[in-house]
Amino acid sequence: MLNEQLRRRLQAMPKAELHIHIEGSLEPELIFELAQRNGISLAYPSVEALRQAYDFTDLQSFLDIYYAGASVLLTEQDFYDMTAAYLRRAAADNVRHAEIFFDPQTHTARGVPFGTAINGIWRACQEGPISASLIMCFLRHLPEEDALATLEQALPHRDKLIGVGLDSSEVGHPPEKFARVFERARELGLHLVAHAGEEGPPAYIDSALDVLHVERIDHGVRCLDDPQLVQRLARERMALTVCPLSNIKLRVFDVMGSHNLRRLLDAGLAATVNSDDPAYFGGYVNANYLAAFEALPLDERHARQLAVNSFEAAFLDADSKRAFLDEVEAFFAPV
Ligand code: ADE
Ligand code: ZN
Image 1 (spheres, protein in one colour):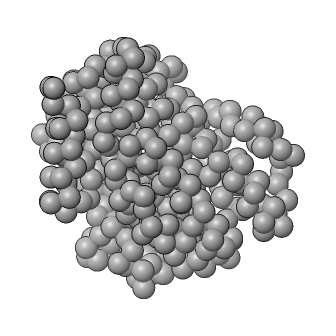
Image 2 (cartoon, protein in one colour; image 1 turned 60 degrees about the vertical axis):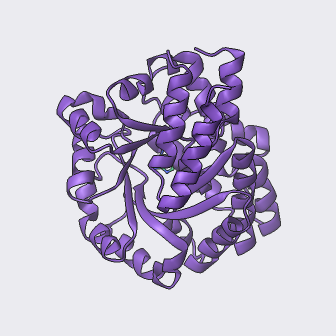
């Protein structure tokens, strides 16, 4: 429950964001600007009409519009502008460090070279104003061969990546489908994450851990359907990158009051709060904290725990992690 002081603390506290699809940060205004710049005609007559179409019934209904939105990205400058806009917005929410997903196959399938996408995104990340690193996601609705070819294309850019992930349509595309490409990514020393247990069953979380050997679970909210899995996730201190507004917009939960974030924390799970696709789901990371704390019995201790979890789960070197965690402790220290 949210009073004015807690609201200000949630906004001002230092935090990491670990689940943000950069293509999902493309605001309708920027979609129109890039469409005009690139001579692309859109299926919607105005920014308002496009925004009004953001009325989703499930993950797939969102993905259809999200991939259409990304079709305006053609040049390295487009990818740079999108990423720079997100980083400015994240800094305003006191995000100190972001681990940013991008979907190269969404672009290479349209004839945009892999290098165009990653170079634009990466250049913006180098320029700040916050610490940022990149996780390349494979689209799970496509065959594993396509993911393997994408990993090959990424090899000249290996140093720009901290990891690989797995996103897009979950049900019917279990983690096992991507065992070989994740094995190859592991050999390359990349960190591994996967969306699991967003719409899919808890068994997908188990196989993301056992078959793909992921180090974080993206979403994972459906783990509470399986008490044994919850015990395992707690024991292993496996981070879940939870995205409250996304879960409401995509109808994983009916209303924020029935979201399970508090129950995840009570079960001892390393939950974190993130925005997923902020331009589509009604807000950036602070809006996610505020919506969850408004609707659920969460207090300042939970705020602090979530900030700590966000840095503990980040793929940062030990010194950077310690420095960020010290910043959190100082922020919450009694005066
Ligand atoms: N791609 C972008 N957002 C996604 C989500 N929430 N789940 C799966 N794939 C995605
Ligand atoms: Zn996601």
